[in-house]
Amino acid sequence: MTLVPWRVPPRAESLIEKVRLIYNENLPLLATKPLTPVTKEQQRKWWAGVDHDKVKLYVYMDPDDVWSDIVVGFSLLTDRGSYVTPMMAVTEKYHDRGYGQEIMLHYLQTAHPKPLRAQSLMLNLGICMLNSLMGWKVIGSQDGVYDLWHENGSGHDFQP
Image (cartoon, rainbow, N blue to C red; front, side):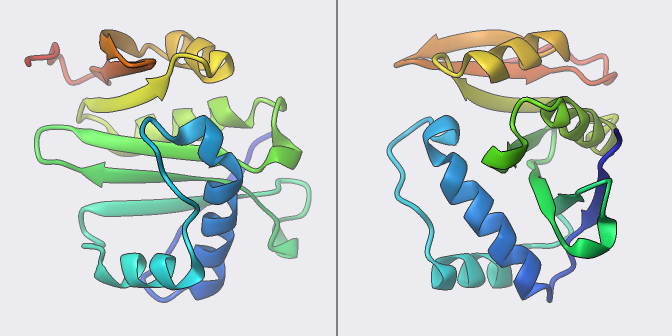
């Protein structure tokens, strides 16, 4: 099954709200430092202040019912100049269906040819396995968090 990616435009409050709900639902799996759930107002202010040329937000629609507005997950890519940082999450109802791999493949293709840098919780075994499968390299670790690098076809090894 292939998810349908949609890039979120600057004025898409209903999609931003769906991203917020998925983010908050997955916060225990995403947070590499203590974080609190994001409120509707915080999310709205954040999205209004984002540089939409450097930040790309995608939602992934249910492939069986694209017109239903069911958002399965999201990815967020932030261009940091020499590399890109990704974040992704899948709503709990759709966990363990292979959608995480589809989303990761999409964001790797979208970021290409720039390398990527990220962090992952060591305790999140599912994402650790997915990261390894998809070519992420552990470049360090501290306090239960892996620092990760993906050269993504750039030919650039990690340089601290």
